[in-house]
Length: 290
View (cartoon, rainbow, N blue to C red):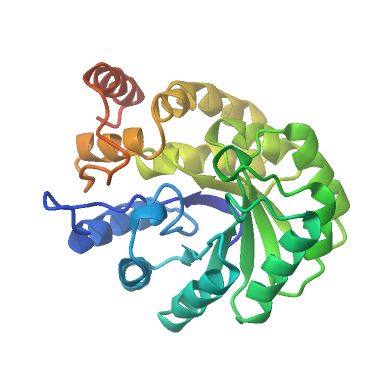
C-alpha cells in the first residue's frame, strides 16, 4: 500500500455544509476503478482541520466501506493525545494505516518530534506514515529525526512535501537500510523524487486525473522513462492549476467540473474565484478529462 499513486481524497460537502457521504463513496469508487494503489481520507486535502472528531471517524469509516484498495487514514494533530485517539479510532473502523502530520503551531524540538511520533506508534498496531509539510505546519521534520523514527517498527514511511530535493535525498540515504519508504507530497516533484528513490505519491492531482498519474508512475517503474517524462510535462499545467489558490479549493471545483462530488470548502476557505475556474476548465479540457 506504500507504493504507486495514492490520492489524497477531498471531503465532499452538501449545500448545507454537512458531509456528503454518498458523494464520498462515489468518488472513492471512481478512483478505485481507475487503478489507484491506496487512498488517504482526512488529510489536508480532505479538510481535516474543519472536521469534527465524529465526522473525521465517519469519513474514514465510509472510505473503508467504499474502497477495495488500502486506506491510509489521516489521524494527525498538534495534540499528541488527540492524535493517539484519532489513530485508535481509525484502527477500530478498519483503516489499513495512518498518516500523521508533523505537529503544527507548537514548534516542538527535535526530541519532541521523536517522542510525539513514537507515542502514537506505540499506541497502535497500524503502520504509520509521517507527513512533513512545513509550509502548513511551520515546523520541518529534519532528516536525522526521520532516520531515528524509521527504526521504530511500525513507522514505515514519510510523505515529504517540503519541496527540498536535497532534504528528500538525504532522508532516502539515511533510511536505506530500514524498511522505510518515502512518498512524494508534491505532484510536480513526483517524477524527480522517484528518480532518487521515492516509491510513489500521495497526490492531489490523482483526484481528477488518476489514469494519467498511474500511467506516469507505472511508466517510471517499468523503465519507460521517456513516457514518464512526457506525462509529467503533460500534467504540469494541472499541477499548477490545482494550487492557484489554497488546496483543496481548486481540486474540489475540479472534481465538480468532471462530475464528481465536491461542494464548497468550509470556512475559512472559500470557493474558487471565477477567473481561476476558467483557467481550471481550460486545463481539464486540454487534458481530456472534462
